[in-house]
Length: 338
Ligand code: SF4
Image (cartoon, rainbow, N blue to C red):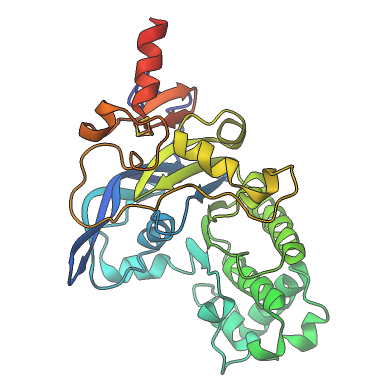
């Protein structure tokens, strides 16, 4: 079954639809093809994780949805629809007004989002600029949200500055700010990477509770498979700018269809049962994204690569009701079964 065969529930429109997205960065060494023919849906009120090694394009994809790309980035094909509205050709003013209203983001480093010279109170009131409420109402909502994310004594601590809080507390404040505007889509870009394991678990549980309460969708970018398994409903696996596999969490973690997904899972420290001093890694490196590519992007590191993988880029094959992967082996397996 190919991906373009009709899906079950095809009539229910996803909140976010990404179709055939291609994006290049212009560099002195040439064009870097950072996203290649990326297609991904984020259903309403679901959490979709994006996983992959550094350089796989997962953060670039998140920033493209937010419209927060550097000047040397150019979308060369495809489109992005949020609630059916095309984002890429939207006038800049309309696109900006979606931020902090329909769309919110949590960054890896909370200090990227927080202004160090303004109080938390002022920043949390400013972020509600779309709301027709008095300043005291906005302050009360901010205090309530700080309480909700576990900031002790929020009534007095709201007048503090970011440096008065620990790293974990600052990330909680960022989550409070991002969700205060009740977005339809929250993009979380490695929000737990800078935190220790205990804080990470707390933040994941907090995000899960608040997502259910608010009913928003989350696009959760992470290289931590355990966090993705805990929080997400669906997962997209990215490699060298392509989505190589996508499906429900249980499909990806229990019956991965792509050799890269299997390799990622084998290297996950959370799944290693034996005592070891060295963590396993996937042999080889992510290929350079400069110039055009022929064949499968994973072929230099794939233990199952064969002739066809050098010349032909695999299409997406549906391997379950809502589970797809790009690997020639899936086509070969079907021929054998036929
Ligand atoms: Fe490996 Fe070939 Fe499948 Fe690519 S298409 S993942 S190289 S077997």
